[in-house]
Length: 307
Image 1 (cartoon, rainbow, N blue to C red):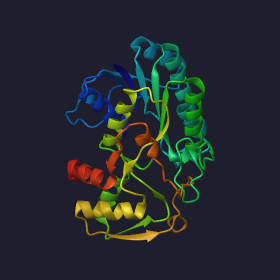
Image 2: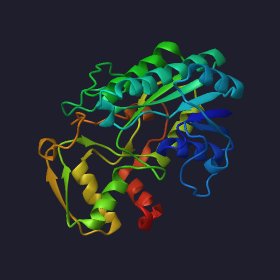
Image 3: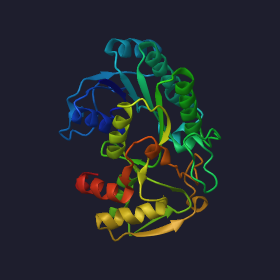
Image 4: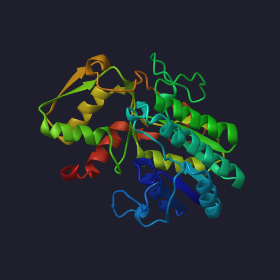
């Protein structure tokens, strides 16, 4: 099986490439950078075939992917800077990447009859209430530009293809790139106290674990919408930070605040990021380990001195 992976310079794409190599599949990575840019951790992704690709360039997408002719496309590339996406001069670019770029890839997937995985987000919903969102829920009410454009990407895939997996995730962390854990560890090193919101509820997703699930999926034809985060229960960012510091051995005080009290975000954030993942088990997929277990493994592998 040959798999084309976009966004390999990010957290998830990096881990997907490594998971493919572990299983003996042929992975071809791509991103917008001229050459692979990411952690040189001795894993397969650093030596795998790589092609520079701007997914907003329709002709380039068509040529590159048609020439490679993969059996599967795993589309991890996206604009993910949520607050910056709200800037008036960025909206068109965000839409060109998250919606237009995804449409370009879906069109080629259809032409070459490839399966496609699209990575989406809890931000396609309005983030209200306390009921976990179901994967087949179509009550879309994105609350910011990022969420709206990711929804447009979902619809591009679903309206173009029949052989697709749309996988919504939340609170992502991985070795390759920036994330909440790395930020909190940096801040906790230099401050006696940090304030963290306690009214946004969800579950973290470790890209190492998610990559395993995604490759499990593409080995099947169990297409459709899925939710995938680590197990272990729903928590707040405050709860998560406390556990991060506990595992890392930090004594930094963590003080809970409301989103309104914190008040630094330009984009509206969901209060309810609870994602129901029962469809995974119903379709025979192995759920991800608990987020507590994932966090311990992650911090054990981090280079704490060079965060």
